[in-house]
Image 1: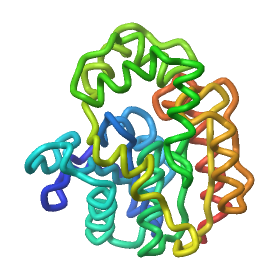
Image 2: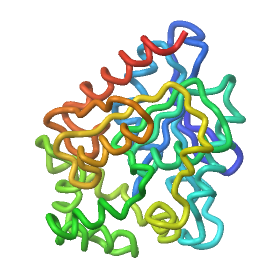
Image 3: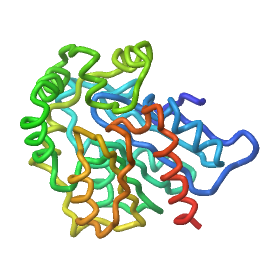
Amino acid sequence: MNRSRFGDLEVIARGPTDGPGRGTPLLFVHGAYTAAWCWDEHFLPYFAGLGYNCYAVSLSGHGGSRKTGYLDGFSLADYVNDVAEAVQNLPAPPVLIGHSMGGMVVQKYLEGADAPAAVLLCSVPPQGLMGSALGLMMSKPGLLNDLNRILGGGQPHPESLREALFHQPIDADILLRYYHRCQPESHRAIWDMTLFNLPHTARMNRPPLLVVGAEHDHLIPPAQVRMTGVTYDVDPVILPGMGHGVMLEAGWRLAADTIADWLADTLP
């Protein structure tokens, strides 16, 4: 693993150990309440082992990236600019892989730029977060309250993290480690994804696109993943037996293999 910086942005980089690797790098964009570290648990080593040069960026206000002013000052547009800054520092245009909020960032990035391919993984749909919030209000009101508590910098119970991210069993010590690495999120960015800065789909570049969801995702349930697929005229893949945090689940290989197989068929 190589921890480096692109200006004020924290980047975790991994590459193949037996050669220069494939010509098209992969850039991973994390979701809300986390940072680049979530990709390095499993996905970065896995894809580097397949010959890809892999990079995960921590968006502004997250992880070790720039923290100028208050977290709530960062907008969705700032996160898009972070991705653009990271892309400019890579040796070639990357495949963009965005999880949850990161998927929304990727969609907004594609309004003004192109990519060889993109993956939306349990992504906020182009219609925004309102549907997700209403669904949680009806089905998981306690979880919604705890997510709002994290948003404001509070400390929810670790069991809320388990409920939000995981369907498969997870060891208590691993859950606690993830819990301590989570962080608040920008209210401004959340509101942008809910109402104020949704993707203009007619303006977007349309590279080859993979849309992936999880069967037991409480935050972005399969119905919303299918809505994303309809919007972009793509048949989504719904991963069985998994929750929202697919890159951290015990069965993470299912998600990684799904992406890897698609990349093998899609990239030159």
